[in-house]
Amino acid sequence: MEQKISGQSYKTYLAAIASSFQKHPQHTIVGDNVYTRVLRGAAWPDKPVDTGFLQLLHTLRGVKAPPNVVVEVIYRYRKAVLDWGWRANWKYNRLIQKVNGEQTPDPSEVKALDAMKKLKSVNYYGGADTADVWMYVVVRSIGDPGSMDAVCRKIMNDMKDIGIMLSPLIQEQQQAFRETFVLGRSDETFQKAYPGRIVQLDVVSSLYPFLTGSINDGHGGYFGHSIATKSANFVDLKKGSGNQNIIVIGASGEGKSTFLQAIIESLRAEGFLVIVFDMNGEYRKVCEKTGGLYIDHTLATGKYIDPLAIPDKIGIAEEDAGRLNAVSDALISTVSILADGITPGERNAADRALMKLYEAVKIDMENPQTWDFNDQPFDIEDWWNALQNDKNKDARTLSEKLAIYFTGSKRHLFKHSEKITIPTDCSLVVFQVGTSLEGADAQVGAAKMAMTMSFVRDVLRKEKLKGKRYTAVVFDEAQRALLNPEMSNYINTLATFIRHLNGLLVVSTNKPHVFWVNSTGGEGGTGIWANSKYKVFFWLENSEIAAVEKNAEIPKEITDTLKTLYQTNQFLIRHPDRGWDRCKMYLPPEELALYETRGLKK
Image (tube, one colour):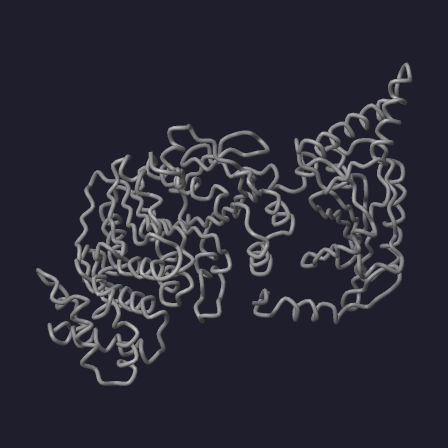
């Protein structure tokens, strides 16, 4: 899938922009009268580059430009790969001899030696992160190239006075324009031709907020410690009227599950009711040891929440009016997952069978007064019988797809319908809907998840009416559900309206590609991605990072950093207003013991 910019593909958009360029050896003309020249930092002063120095350059204090001229300093950043070979060691030893051999060594050389010691330590021991930084000065003039020339000359002279040489990049202005264009992509060949200045990340972080940014509200749930500031991040997930949804992405074994369980406990401590869909039993221990309600709906138990159960009225007109829609959504999602996808005709056949049940008990969809019963008048088995009586071709093919679950070897799937009541003092409900993330069990798990959707919506509505606590719904290992068009549509919708019910959604997966349109024809998790305030990234396989780079508007600096997080248990977290932060969870041993997901039974 190509990135989209205002309805156009990324390639089409850039082609349209490029068509308006006029090339010149010393600048680029955009449209008819905007002249742009890019100057590159070619030589730096022979001293360590500190934060204050970069900030000074970033503002270019003292440069006075005419009203028609705009000056901008742009940095490009890339994680550095150090090669401390014989040449670097030779320079290092020479500098040691020079500093030690002089009675009053040059202060700048002392600082340079200190910087080289740190870089050597980084190379040998991995004690800190480093980066290559490229600096560009972009000068734009409207209608008057002469003004641009005058400002460029002054900037080059001023920079020379503080030890920085700027290259005019004659004959390479178009490559430089692409390098500094806000939607441009860095050209690795161009960067190699002009090496950057190596600095430590605590220096360049003044220009890239995700390195030292903070998502901290000072109170709320614990979201780990910031690596840069060493301080704890507490996030208030109750404040504001916008969504507070959370996406957690990461490969297996990188700390994603521990993070997720710690967030769940933080939500409980903040007074949330948390409902978790557990695909492989990871949450059973923490649920049982902390007073939660554990519900085993795996295939072997035969237990399920009937998707056809009509929720009770709660007194909120808009929610009460949507009760039959919730039943229909839960049914269609369940059928679609079990059938491994359905055609439009099969969807209609499923709906016709539901309408037959409504007709039999005199439910009028236009009259809510006919929707309520003392006891549920039909169940999923009655729906199956109605489908069997439909002689339409699509009903026949749908019956063949589902027969194994109603008359075949897996007919115990619908053996025991359960009505769940959550105790008022319970803050954690875990539905274990599977025992494996692969194969048929994962498919049944996703179907059991779909069956509970009407129940979940009913819980959200009731908690909203009570007004006593917030609700969080957690989908762990959600890739199977998001790849199903019907189920992904429901979860996307839930991500949008859950904030109106004092709730938030937490979705976790090791397959980020499921958040975008997929080959099955569904929307994946596009609605969740667009409606999630917090996005958390643990290390990912290269193929999954490529999916993020292709589909998400995430800076290359972020994905470059993501590639370095392997086996660190660190993560990157994005806040829409505060940028990025790099964090790690620090939990007491007794809490970590609750979250263990691997190991032998003792």
